[in-house]
Amino acid sequence: MIFPFKSQGLIFLFGSFSGENRPVIVVGNKVDLLPGTHHGYLNRIKQALQKSLRTNGLGNIKLKNVILISARSGFGVEDLITEVHRMLEYKGEQENHSKQ
Image (cartoon, rainbow, N blue to C red; front, side, top):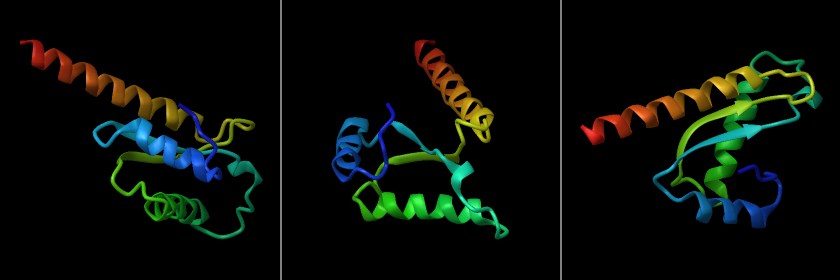
């Protein structure tokens, strides 16, 4: 599911929809529009997203990762694909072990 982060109502919908036991990847898009003039600015953006989750009552989600992307330039998209693949691969391994 993709939700616009700035919408307060959707943040709470997201929290109730995702549940506490499901791993969550938070994706921040539009990083190509941010001024990258300071060293470490992407890490500060990630930290701000994580803080915003806690501030808006989503501190109890199972946060797997925060990934910043630019859909326009492609920045970070490969990282997102890799993370989703890892999650699906891990889930598949867990299901195989539980069947044995």
